[in-house]
Image (cartoon, rainbow, N blue to C red):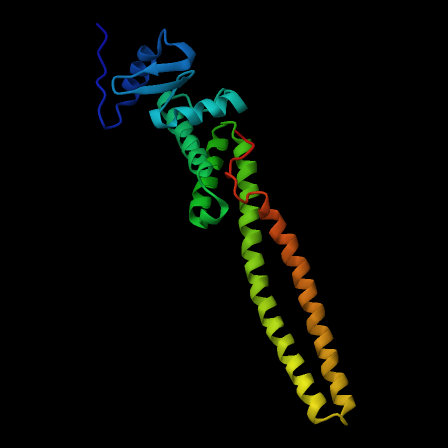
Length: 218
């Protein structure tokens, strides 16, 4: 007699999780399997947590069976890997670029790299993470350049004040005024160069403004 698998809050033994899920998944339409405590989604021998079902189906619809070439033989472990990918996608979908910190981004990238090592087809997700990393780095660089720009704008304002004061008090010192005007020209040129660099860097992250970080992929 087949042993009945009781659902608990703890992870079941690997062979019991696989066998129980396979029995639960028989004769259910659209890859959905009813478990003892809720609904799970089935991809071959892979099942996902109920909360990840919409993400799993969106991934399958857009990118197909991403675990068909997976090197892992254990359906239980493959499920863990797939659920990790689903959780990365789920978190990115509800985030904006400004909400993402470098620690979480690093964790997401590590999860994807581990999945790729196991031959899980998530190149599409790695590409998006690369784009996000570039956008984050561009924002950081833009902020640094903005600080430098502020410094140069302060210097520019100081030069203007000095020039105006010197024109009033030392009109006969034309040579000294010319030197200060050259300094002003240099500062103005530097500000213009920084403005160009900032606009270029800012344009990289603008594609994510007001949008989900997974926009267009799912």
